[in-house]
Image (cartoon, rainbow, N blue to C red; front, top):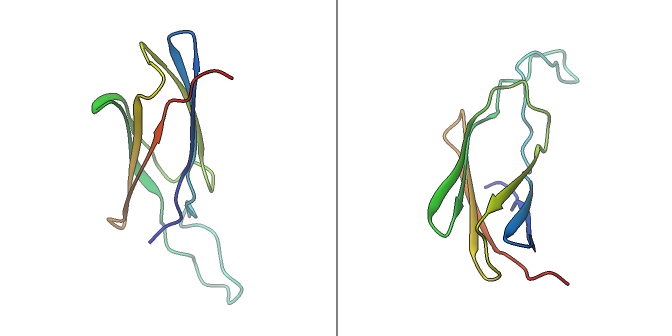
Length: 106
């Protein structure tokens, strides 16, 4: 099982500023290990972000994305207490979903 994502959603007016750090090796399939053998390709293929159950972002990725990718987005119409959930699926079938609550401005 992969490590949890680091999620943060803060309210700025009626817009939630969402920041996501996904822990994943994102191997390209071209790097060699210490023995000189190719490290198999392993990367996140799809990312979905939901706001209160409604999809606000769907992305298809490839091995061109860096290790531990960061994703930032803004969601209009958000309110404090709304739920933001993020799901990714990788090319090996592993899947991870994490959720956060939109925080009121401080």
